[in-house]
Amino acid sequence: MTLISRPSSHEQMALAAIDAGTARDIALMLADVQAVLDGLASADAPAAAGQAAAILAGADSPYGLQGLAGAVAETVSRLNLAVRGALAGIPGIP
Image (cartoon, rainbow, N blue to C red; front, side, top):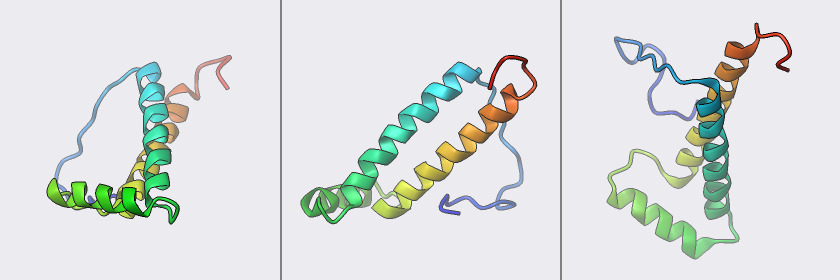
């Protein structure tokens, strides 16, 4: 798990209701963010990686560049799973 918050590390569950179309749009946007982060974190972009790491440090982010890329990937996976689960009972939707 790459997200900072771990299961049972909080006392309340947050629930956000969004429609499946919005969830899909968020998942697509996060997939693009993941692609950008993966590109920045690659060995092909050392200057950009250094700049991105400095921006994260300047923002007091608890994530490094690789950790942020992993957390975004995990979030995309969880969101896609939630969308599939929400749509599973609807006839005609794959």
